[in-house]
Amino acid sequence: MSEEQGLLPVGFVKNFYFCQQIPYINLVMHVFEPETESMVYGRERHLRFHAQYLPRGIRAVRVETDVWLAGPRLGLSGVLDALVHAVFGELVPCELKVSGLGRGGAPLKDLVQLTAYAMLVEEVYGRTVKRGVLYYSEDGGKHVVYFRDSLRGLVRKAVEAMRKMVETEKPPTARSLDKCAGCWYSRICWGGPVNRQP
Image (cartoon, rainbow, N blue to C red; front, side):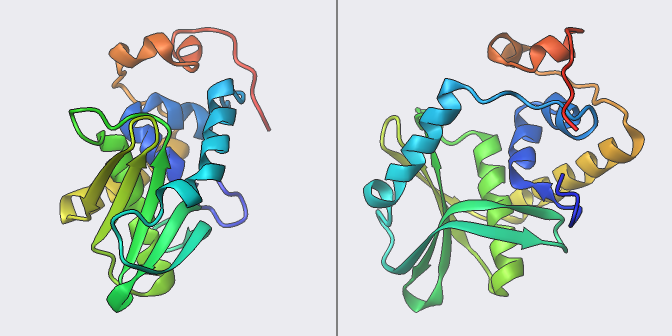
């Protein structure tokens, strides 16, 4: 959590919809996954993001990249991969994912993360944001997201639940067992050693 402003990172909202244990471990136990090769790879892919993916499919006037957004009203902050200033004054937030889109479409965690960024753009720029785009670098997939009230509600629900986690220090009951096998945090969830960070 951003100590100075009391804002939660947008990435925690994404993690909340992947597995609620992760934001609990980060926020309450102050334990974070060490940097992995895939994280370094993801950062390198983001460096090539701007030239390769933007503004595919959007009539852009201007593109801002690595946009820092902080929204005290929403209670979130984060760095958006790109904000496209499109024709007719439309603002279109865009995120790059290093995975593939796949046949099932964009996962909920990605949809909610982009929605959180859209809500931050609205708070910072004072304009309504109707759509955004998720780009998937592994297979070149593109998913347009329309920011419905239901997605916005999921963002608010996650922020509220994470704030409650911090206040009560009570761990969430739901575990995503199917996701545990490849998850670094599973060692903590299932009683392994903990190396806390200040």
